[in-house]
Image 1 (cartoon, rainbow over the protein chains, first blue to last red):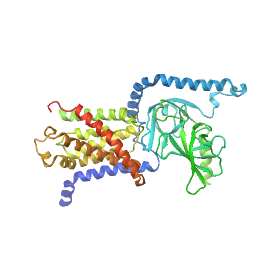
Image 2 (tube, rainbow over the protein chains, first blue to last red):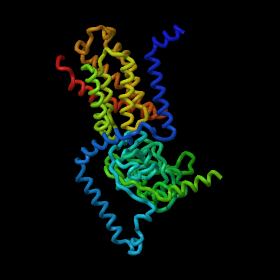
Image 3 (cartoon, rainbow over the protein chains, first blue to last red):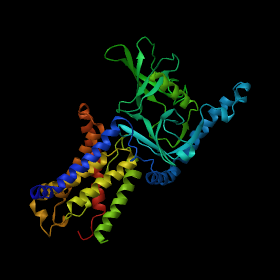
Image 4 (cartoon, helix red, strand yellow):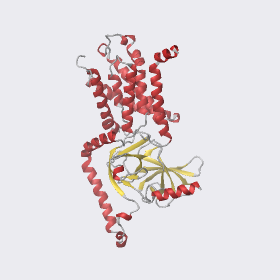
Length: 271
Length: 168
């Protein structure tokens, strides 16, 4: 016994090292397989507030540019509104909207890692839940992953775990949008059947198959495409509309029917 | 709390804030975000309780992890650097670093730079290997270690000469 204790005491630093590495590996590997770490993420109040202060300060450097972007977006939306048929606007009562929209500020951005997460300054108290969609002016950005009281983290489309239903705008064929971690301006659309006619420059939008994003939110354009090794599906390189490194204001999109859809799907797969 | 512990605490807070607010959003040449906080292991006092040093390193890494949503990757990398520091010290400065009167003052610039470079290299190698987590992307890991490591090294060398003690 004495010897064992002596042995442990002699190599106590090595034991401490092994112990701490083990803890961190468990934390890392467990969240590798499924979700982002539940307890250690930047939606927590201390990191959220620090990022909030940082964003407060750096926001002044981009005010003019950001205002111009918002003005352009307003212009586009007003054009749509004024040219829409009159009776389609009458029913727009916010209590009946299927997709409620909420504005938020991006307080932490990241594009350099293979698994990028963003942080926004709206949380549970403002009605943000897990699995809400997040978009910016140019198109989709990601999906809400963890929520704290006043902040939320977003799994970016630039994340190797991201998998979003998307389709080609003019032909309605849908596939999965993934990212291979190589270039932060390009994502990949896979599982588009071989018979689909493709043209470089075609627009890719979100498909209606998921209950997260509404249909037809822009994503990007086809940069190039090739058949996969088994020559049955296309692998399409999509260049994103959003400049992912330069985003300050985002919109969070909910779906009032999501719970119903999820419950129905759950029941169907269980039977 | 004595002077050295206070200085370490100030460096801890300062480096975490600098890392998460400035260097993590640098995106130099597209995607290079230097991990400048590794200079903490260069600045930390040489004569130290090793277990305490490892714990502090671990928590430094974990704090950075919480801010940058990188699971516990920074924690492992920092912990390993803290654990391996005595070996690196012996490699760079020879056995005399263990003597009582040893300090950075009587070492050459090249020795200190080698010491810093090895700390950064080990830190980045572990961080990016675990981040990419696949040996199929070996070249990607090497490229990231090289580019990010070089930028980190330059910034750390600048910081270390900027905040070096005046008595030198």
